[in-house]
Length: 372
Ligand code: KG4
Ligand code: ZN
Image (cartoon, rainbow, N blue to C red; front, side, top):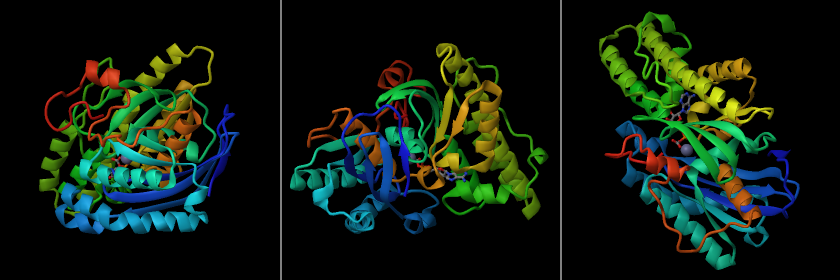
């Protein structure tokens, strides 16, 4: 249970039920945000589907959607029980409405609409990425604005966050997300799904200097990322390694290469951000599943020291997908007087900075498009 003060709020206390079903976690949480902006996580329940997806080495959308349908009643009931409140005590419902696997998103959003309708509560259709953007505020008082590195299984972007719903994108991946690279390389090393944490464990006993991996987009002046070259190179090497020592060395080299790229682009973004905020406090936040990685965090802390930024990351439980971050994003929106109609639609693609995504879709064709 966390209580903290997020500066600058004068709105009434709000108790919000949050729902998250955009990928392979069925999650529900109750968060209270009081009139001073203090945040208290009353409960946060995350039901994972690892076992259902593990045989396939990745998330299977149809299996995920069915698993959400089967789990959501119990997960919500448990979140309400753990919070020690009943539905009468709620002031609103916040459900992820995208981006993500649309079958799963529809399950959580429909559930949220049903609760809102039945209990006559306002609904907030939350952008999952906005949830990650506020997630560090579940564990510390971090006033806006801040520079955000959102680095997860589906997303890798640098954003200037001026407030809830006010994000400007500084850079994004032109191919894979960092977490996707972790997962796919882990798979080629024969590690179990989800690969990121397993790769980090294997890397702990490895020597990152034993393999030389490609350094993408060197010399580019923007803040974009690319991980597909690294993924291909590492997959080729993974076919050749034989001993456990070599596997650990390759895992360490991969982790080092991913952390290095995240750090190089973040350094550039910090310089841009600092130039745009003269005389102001410089705050940096890393969020998303990959923010759980120790080597990545250590590299980003060095960026902060070099550039005069404060460093924050969400508590580990709120790095990967959870519903507390969705409830908090909903609470912040409701406190600002923003809610959604019951005909809000599930959006498989929903960039945080829509203008940037439309004007410069880093990869406009295929599966990704302007998703992130
Ligand atoms: O935020 P998240 O739960 O889901 C998305 O919104 O995508 O992030 C999941 C991603 C996965 O790719 C997972 O492998 C990665 O975060 N991840 C990690 C670690 N823990 C989770 N990657 C590297 N090291 C970790 N310790
Ligand atoms: Zn996520």
